[in-house]
Length: 211
Image (tube, rainbow, N blue to C red; front, side, top):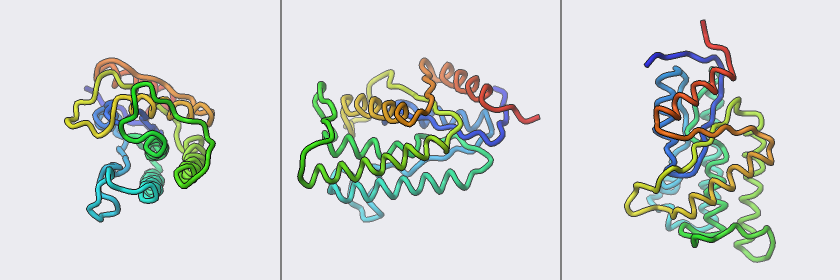
């Protein structure tokens, strides 16, 4: 497969956990000569403490969300020549929002509740929403191309760290946030080869190739 170098093109591939972003961004980085960037996985032990994501409190979850958001912003800023991002600055906020509202294994028919109510959990959700506003503002200015990689099959993980409903709600929340931020989103589906070809065409349309 031939490689084509793109100048200063900032590409974010978004989608829920297990949708195939890592495989696709790895291939894109190899074939476009753009560096690949990503945030450290949310499931990694909290702050090096050895405490798993599943066992963290609501406050610790928000701390980790801010930490990962900062890591992504710094990582992207260090690549002025352009990049292909596995996920985006919205990724960790989406996880935290759904986790706080519904838990890791919501019912198949679960929906995100409206922003109302009182109490500590609602307060945590409101803080998460403010982080979301920051993430959406950066998405407006920080990416030249946003590509959504939807779920086209069940999670292969066993045991599963989240449910299929969690994945579906995460994707819905992500796309709604990008729409509110007026960020155009392109969808790629099909096999890895088909997704890769579609991404390359989108990237070619966004920026001229280097001579």
